[in-house]
Image (tube, rainbow, N blue to C red; front, side, top):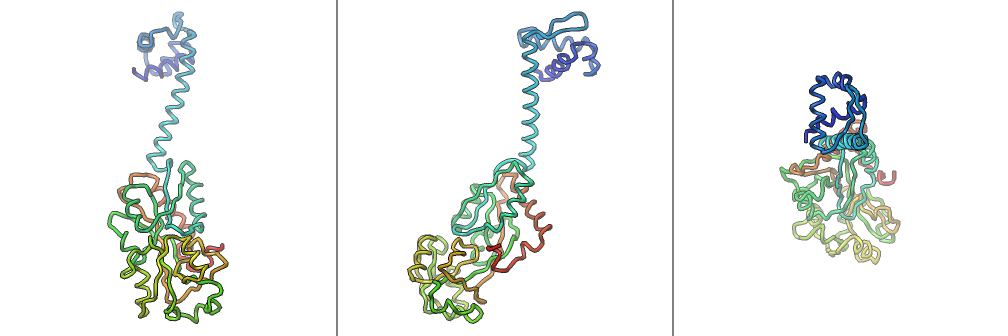
Length: 315
């Protein structure tokens, strides 16, 4: 069915005069009359009661007019929404952070995005580092927060992934508050002062203690401590509480503000560049909108990505 005939129908149903309707449509009265007659034949019922050049709507015609107007309005809305989807201004974006980390310090960035793209829903999830590549490849994650520091980044640094810098993450040493060295200042200590300690390591984070990042951190200082593998962050916290070891973490861990533990920012621990990363093959158009928003936010807040103090989690 030719949808243009419904446009003729709506115009004629409004003015109820073939001559006026023809002038509005820039068609001759005879062409308009044939189009309306053709529409009525296709529908199988009369839309108008004709009287010379004037006409009135039949009951069926009046009902059709209301319905067609609603359909046209719905179609226009559908087209507008589809354009928003195509432009990346409508949809859903899955954002992931490493398991056990708190990225609440990005709430202003997320709020800025939702203010500018209110029709895009943000969903958040946690991932284990060794599973990140899988999630990026199968598009179950659209945007992932990670770090660009090696050796962590070496396993996920691939040409098919894009990334931009979004901040700074500081490593620190977590130990029980009553630990003998907990009262010392961080600048008075180095990792060598903890060479006899047992270090707790998450299994999902570091599966090979011979070549993993924790071992390499200590190797730079000429020793290898004792290690104890724990299953998850809950086990890590319980082990710390029960004095079964200490651990290296960052100022992004969920346990950061736990008063049971002392955080020491040793000078020989690493500082990492935080990034957001995404797959070039991900077809979600909302990714481009998010990246654009992040870059715009950094232009307006140039110190955001450069922050390096350990208090930003408390702000």
